[in-house]
Length: 380
Image (cartoon, rainbow, N blue to C red; front, side):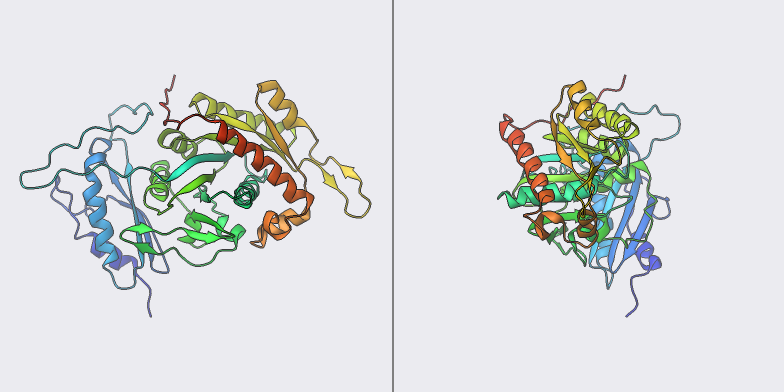
């Protein structure tokens, strides 16, 4: 049976009209980033920022039009705000929450958007200033360590450009959709959501910043996460749109910084740490990954990437040092094979190291008083 074609999707979207401009959203050039995989369809609708809050009915209409196509099993449509020519860039800040304006005569006023992951008690971001430091491996093992301690855990893969959680958790297939809400996938006892479930892992994600932000919000808002004690968010490396979106839109309980010991990695880790501080997200501590290599034959300890740099940096910056994770082939092989070491070899010293760090993080979450509100970001 032939798959869903791009022409069929665009033809369906051509039946959806912009109520103010009187033309369909395809003719107006508002559809961007169309992705189709195994009946799962994703795209963004570009809209002027001032019209964003009232454009939700059009977004839902677009999703409904595509979902009606034979062979489509799920639709993810996100609104992206493109700055119009001649307007000043808006100062980043929390999403405005005005009262819904009255709609045209005879029509109901647009409803406010749902809250992001309302049943999740605490959300923590696992971040790094640069790629290649083992952040995703750390995130998945920490999530599984928290689950092993008896907590209900979700894992959000926020690295939309390089999603890795489907492979690391050994999950295949696509999420199902019920009443326009996606059901998260499950692996090793934890709930997970990733763009990797919707897009082939060899397909490059060529998305601009607003599209990334919209996709992240939708993976939080339109996924049935249910009641969770904690959600671990695997952030993309750096200090860009994804990090600002999470800090701006989500009440993060804190951030965990992952770094290797060498100076160049610590320099970038410092940037990531300072970014979270500037947007008032508590930094729970630093993890030194690839801290040392212990020869499995002779037991000799080698400091391939130096050693102790993250601990010294934590002391210098006045934050907690959460622990060391060694450079070990078993950690790499189990992660690549979809059997993270915390579950595949729970009695190993490496799994114990992850569990010890997870215990420290949980203690910090328990010590929090109340729920942290999303911060206001001020650019100076």
